[in-house]
Length: 567
Image (cartoon, rainbow, N blue to C red; front, side, top):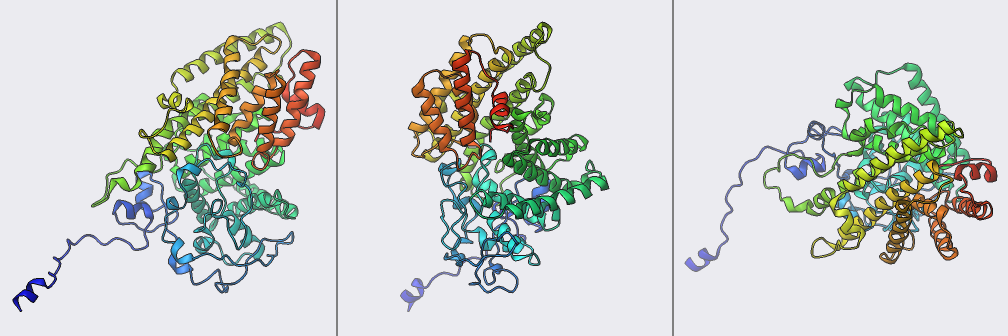
């Protein structure tokens, strides 16, 4: 009996009583072991500390698939009239997927999201898990309004499954895009303007994949523009702190509209929407910008950098605004203290990623500023042709060259190691090494593209300098290392501009053919890759015939009777 008693399990001691934590709080508060007030999309704790507020999908929605729908109700893509076409229901275990956080779905090796399938619509009913976040279709249903047409609902379903858009792929991981995507959907519940903008963007992407949705894209664009006009007529005080939700919705709307206009080649409308976003930025109290607004401004800034090549003003590319916009919210680097019993190794790879990658983002954002400064000296932005004009341009170009050299001297210390392929184990995990190496090579290529761009604008009739020749060689080496060092069959989409600049100065026929083949491989993600390849071919032919550099935008106008941004 005594032996049996000795083998009996001991009663566990009473646990230390802690303050109750919300069962439905955000993931950020739960990870930090603090109480959450459950305010969506940004709770009070995350707002106070300027943290990225992430939410776990709710289990309560698993039993329904929208208002009045059974779990097996078919859902489909909309037709041109806004009606949903029946499709097979997703065949995926919802109960297990919702237990994962957004960060668990993708690894960092797939950060760039520029493979051939990036803009392939999800196979509705048999999702490709390498493209679609499988936690999203059901998990986001609780923030999709139930009283909207089925066609619009299908478009929102598509959006919540989307991967990070290529134009912002250099500054956003898929996990952070998933978090931001959830925030945008939450904001759209109280902003019909933003909801229409999301519908416009989603229908455009599907239309570009062959769906008959051009009319729906135009309809939702008109609805967005009408709601935006109402906001303009009302004249909201966007500089007041309590207007932050409205201001964020406005910036998000202008991002989607500008991106849509850019993809559709509506350059004047792109410029107009960028100007509205810049006015909001200028009128606002910048000390009260939240992380979500800064991130939206950073995205808009990337669009502005592309639009300036097609004649835009580059309003977001000035040195004055660079400090705020170049430093995006560091995400997991929240700067707060660890909660009780929190294990710091839980997100160690994400923390390392932010620490190592963030300086590269800053470098890349600063490179975008030079695109604006250089473009402002071309014949489309200022008067050229007289001795005085050319002397002034060369003087300005000398200053830009000096600033470019200073930027290079201040480049992230890790960039040289990554560019040379020396970022390997055991110094860093293979996933992080691949991601950072690929990104830093792309950032550095864009830097050297700026030097070629500067020579073509400011010294059009003069031979290449030694420095410019070295930049061409560097882009050539980096591009080929990117292709040779990765199993993916295409370069990152942000290599399109460096390839165009290199190709415009390349004389070797074999190298020219290689450049064009790489540009064409981007066609599924870079919306105007094929036409850009045709423009490059025409530029090369004219330069070979006339032995004079040709203005790329002028060739666009002559051959295609239009100009567009390189996206």
